[in-house]
Image 1 (cartoon, rainbow, N blue to C red):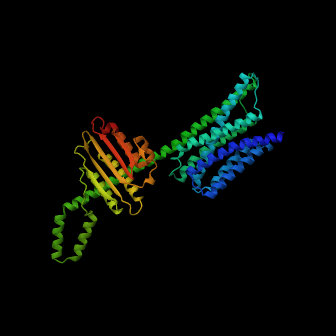
Image 2: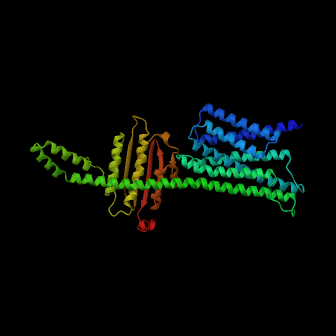
Image 3: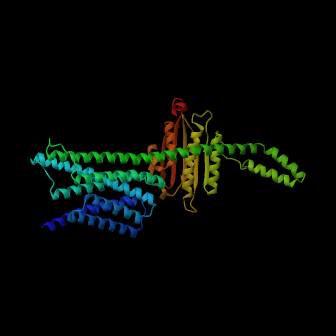
Length: 460
């Protein structure tokens, strides 16, 4: 009879473990790559390992700390062995998963234990309630279900955390999470050894049990909160550093473009004098001097005439460079941008807007298939008391994660380019609309003109 009961308990737990393995598989595949044959092997190793551990826990009464360490070892070893990303990222993903499920499972199991003990004590008048084997099995099932639900819920929020990071960053993320996991395992092991909160004999064992489970609830809840703050805080700091670095790189690039454009303008302005000088060298047949003169002209500035005359030299320089990049990529270019005199919008902010819009457009056109029709249209003008900026470009529909984004707050998920744009738009209390229609990406920005709003000293 006892053997049959143990077999039923193992079968009962196997169902919950199957759900957990399914959730773990989905979680890991969301951040890591794996071959189909390795995926089958990963599921088999995880399932067989967990089943053997359950058999050992029920039949052989193995120590809790051995059970916990072996469970972590099976999952971590299988991920490191079978998945294809770099080792640091694999370690970060699997440690984050193990920490999340451990904390969520312990929190829900301890809370469920408190409810059962209180119910038995109050409703059934049991002075010192204890768990029978069925209730212990059900409690473990509650923990596993909570693990599955928590993995499903948290995976979407972790997607930006495990993308485009360095090995050092993943290592910094992994070590504290592994420490939290170890602390919780030790706390569980201590509870199984009788290291509980004691009332010193002033209260019954019932209250000692309640206080002990409450201690575990508080420990896991705090650990879960701190782990979440650490993970998402690290990701936010990383994004802010990247955004700041890109922002300062753009400042340097725009200054360099303006200087180059200014040199080209000076060269075109002096072209008449250069032609006279070259004619003189030609008549005197000074071929070597002519060659040196032409080389100096070539190095001093680009002779190609600029088509963009917007009213801002910095924006002219920027549009000139982007038009050259578009032509090199066989992309049709159409530009109609006018910036009013005494514009209340900072010149550099204009460059941030136009630069990021056009960088995203050029990148989208580069990803299109050969022979596809590529185009970039950019326009900017005054509309009543607002400045209207609109960019359109062709793109591959497969490269778009979502078809429409209607507010600037959501733009941060689309990348640092749109994030920089949304920051600038927000600074001027403007609005931004982004959408994709029939393989055409459209971004529309409206910036109101108001001296009180656009006082840059107040804004910054």
